[in-house]
Length: 272
Length: 233
Image (spheres, one colour):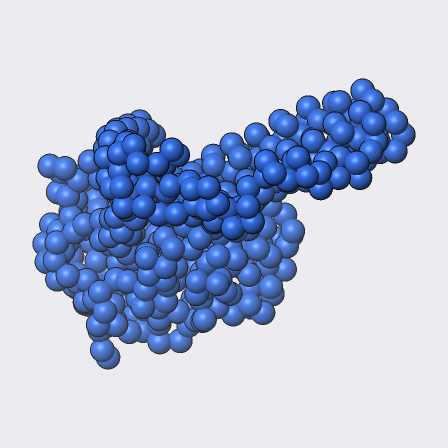
């Protein structure tokens, strides 16, 4: 059933986001034509639109994820969703996975748009893209670049942070939307949804910030690599240290919120 | 005949307002049951409790000896009063959706009924008329070989000629030996199909009788309904 839920969930939430991806592809085509025809103003316009598409992609994805969750669970479509022969935990899991997929895709789209803008700018300047990439072969530049090990651990740390951030976003949003649709708050779901999100996120974020500095768990930058150290960020033992307490705390709270959301959906749901 | 639905001491309130109070009844397999009562008497709340859309009630509900959950939802074909299909969906999407999730859904029958109803497979719900949307929702329910059909006001907002057609469709298409629970306040059009009637007033189950018993007393279901709910008129 999970596979079927994912199929329909991706299809539903992708409807609004898909337009942004089509727009991005159209702009890339436009830039290609502008470069071939050497129309500078069109290339510049292409760059501007790419920037907008990148931002719109991420924003629309986030809005779509929230809207789809609300519509399919607590709007009229809830009559369809909550009468499916599946457990609420499976239903919620499919929505979380779909959310991860779309947010990651929107970030990939943003990064691709950024890279395309750089290449387009360089191509407009002198058309020497090979020369542009050869910069990275220069010894002086290579000396400034981090080591391969550092890059790998840096990317791994970035990815882990990204996944935990998405988990945090999903956990807080789904929890807020679900709480706002329980019986006592159901008359003003949007108001209570926003309130629950901002209050819970604000409080947890304040605690998380405190833990970022004080919890003895940090990501420390050494000369050749990144490593986990059991020292506080503000201990002064490393030149660059990033406290992990806050991120882990927020992700943990989000995980708890998802469990509570699943419980409410299973036992306290009250579709209007 | 064994019981498909068993409800015992069901109570549900919205804040201080008690909507269902100490409701108990059984429904046997193969019966067509009318759930009758004026608007706001608790019919939809009872139906939503049976279908698992409301869970914060006290008392017990069992369908095929299980509490409402994933298993019972696989047995129940539910037609809500509300329009629940997303705007972008087309009949072809809705049929694929139901076929994916309900093992008892008859896809071929659904295609056939779509044609018989004159629905365009690729027309989006948002561009359909109210009547076309109702036809689509009804066919999605009737194309399941379910054990229990729960139809909430299937005749509401429909002209008398269409009501007769809808009733015929329900009678022709519900699965053999299945139980059908129909909520309505349009008694005269429907009463001939009922085996049993449940009448709810202000959250209380005040009549739970076999239609033959009512007829044996020389009455019709509508007579009983008018006697019971005379205060409402």
